[in-house]
Amino acid sequence: MPPRHERILEMLADKGVVEVTTLSDALGVSAVTIRADLDALEKRRLIRRVRGGAMALRPARFERLLDLPSQSFSEEKERIAEVAASLVRDGETIILDSGTTTLALAQALPKTLTDVVVVTNNLDIAGALQSHEGITVIVTGGRLKRGGRNANSRSLISPFGTHLLREINADAAFLCCAGIEATRGFTNGNWEEAEIKQAMIASALRIIVVADHGKIGHVGSARIASLDQVDLLVTDSGAPAADVQALEQAGLRVVVA
Image (cartoon, rainbow, N blue to C red; front, top):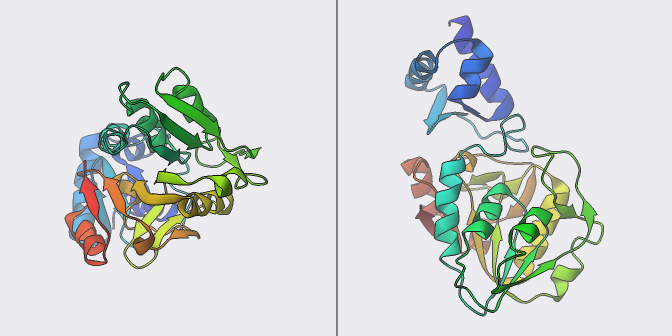
C-alpha cells in the first residue's frame, strides 16, 4: 500500500471523518489526487466516501472532529437549519441545544414568529436571538464549558446545568450529537454535555435531532438517547442511502434537507 494511503487511513482512524482539504494540506498534494486516493481506498472497502471527504469504515469513538473547524459542512448545516426552523410554530416553547447546527437554526428562525420562548444552554444562541421581537430567550444557567472540539462555543453545563430544565414543559427540543448509529442510537463524546441533552429530552414533548451526514455511522462514548426516544432526525443529502435506510428500518423518521 502506498505510504500516502497508509497516512490517510491513520488520519481517519484517529478522527473518524476527514475532509479532502484537510488531507490535501496535511499530505502536500492536490485535492484531485486526494479524491483519487479516496476512490481507490473505497474500492478496497477500507473507507467510506462522504460529501467533501471520507469517513472510517467502522464506527469511531470520539468527540467529533476534534481538529476540523466548527464550520465543517457549513452549507449542509444551513440547509438542515432551514428545514428545522420551519417546524417551529407561533406560541411554542422550544429548547435549543448547544451546537453549530442549532446556532444556524436559531439564525434561521423566521422573523414573523410570535410568542415563542427559546430555552438554551448556549450563550451564542441567546445572543443571536436577542433582537428577535417575537422570541423570549431563557438561558439555563450552569458552568461555562472549556475546551472540547469547539473551544469557542459558549456552552453551559453542570453543575446547575439541568436545574431549570426540570421546570420546563417544552413543545420541542432540537438537539445536536456526535454520533448516530442504528443499534447504538444517539451518542456524544462529552459526558457532561450528554447529561444536559438527556435533561432536555425529559423536558420536551417532541425531540428533533439536527445533524450533518458526517455524524451518521459513528458512536461516541456517552449515550444520549435510543432511536425510539427521538421523533425526527433532520440531516443532509450527503448521508449514505444505506445508512439512512438502516435508521428508518430501525424506526427512526428521517428528513433529508
